[in-house]
Length: 363
Image 1 (spheres, one colour):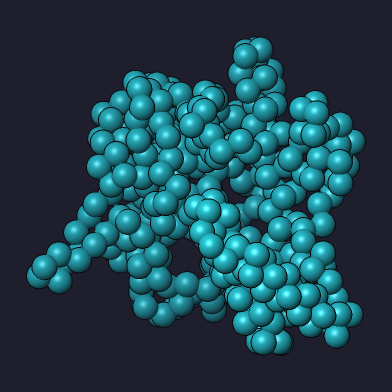
Image 2 (cartoon, one colour; image 1 turned 180 degrees about the vertical axis):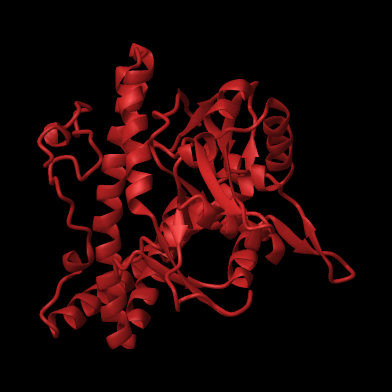
């Protein structure tokens, strides 16, 4: 398998934490008690690293190269925390380390069907946290969020950005604790800190009476957007490394084409699933075609007798499949992805190996 080394995108770029990593955090032992496999820091670091170890179009995989100090600085954790987290991720086979400071993702353990979305500055920036002490006096402190507080902020950042565009999400402390694999007390403390830092807010009348009753939380988009703009301004004024810039451009290009292919292939898959649900008999015909195609390939490869008969049966079944689709005014091509660029099929590469210019013609 061919491997290519990549660096990381600038610190303002969002990252995704696969729900599979979060689900691996806790397990029940023989006595039925919950135990920790991964620390919150391991969940954060594992989610961050898996964003940059990707499968390539030629079947290879990119290798992430990052030193402990650099990774710790990006996510606001110590050198020892990074070392312990990577040891846990390696033990759970989420990441492998082919060589020092290089990381590969085990894609059988990490799938991006569901995820949390986060920003590195959630864990590195200092926020002003204000509260009242028991005597009623106002107190404040300026500090970065802890890892658990940052993960809870990622939870709200993802859930409040829902399809309804309401910037609101209903949940309880118990819901947060269950999703992130933390205790309800930790969830309560993290939500309390985020409220005191004005990162989220809960309107009067929308707060649950206890930890199991759902409250309606909203993100403070204004504060988060200002922080992100400030970070971008700092990074823009910084001196950029040409090698890092080239790596960033390559990652941007790969993500652009990956998102395009995903949209086209998902639309085609949904269309086929909808047709199959309305006409179950089509599934039977297609299954028989697939079975005959496998038998034909096996007979041809091994030189087994009966190959002409198999080819004839397969051709007959394929004609039957096409005839079935024609009854509803459709063809097999209707279930194929409709790519945005017909020249490169949203891969970025033309048949002769040259780069397609559709990336530079994008809107």
